[in-house]
Image 1 (cartoon, rainbow, N blue to C red):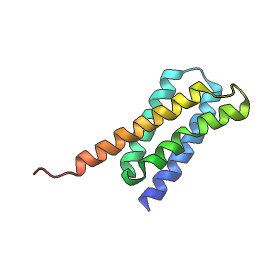
Image 2: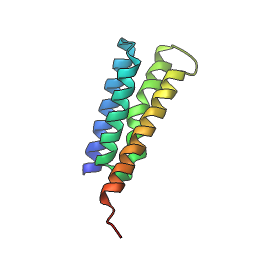
Image 3: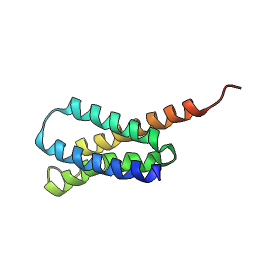
Image 4: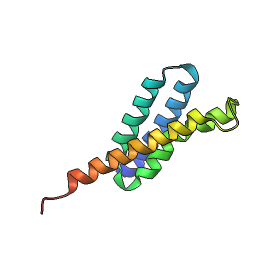
Length: 102
């Protein structure tokens, strides 16, 4: 159940950030939001970290393609990469907190 909530929240966050991307040029803030959101949601659903990364990061390049900014939107691909890195950080943090000392 927690995984499903995290994935739905990730998709909502991705859609919000895609809308935010259309209305602002604050790249640094957007990168920080992408990284933070994907990391926190991946901590909630570590087994589904890759779905979280795609749900947070994919709406930005999809919206950029739909609007027609570029044939292959480099900023959208970079946003997807940042979301993947954030989700991996969240996954690693979740795994590190669950391991017991040997």
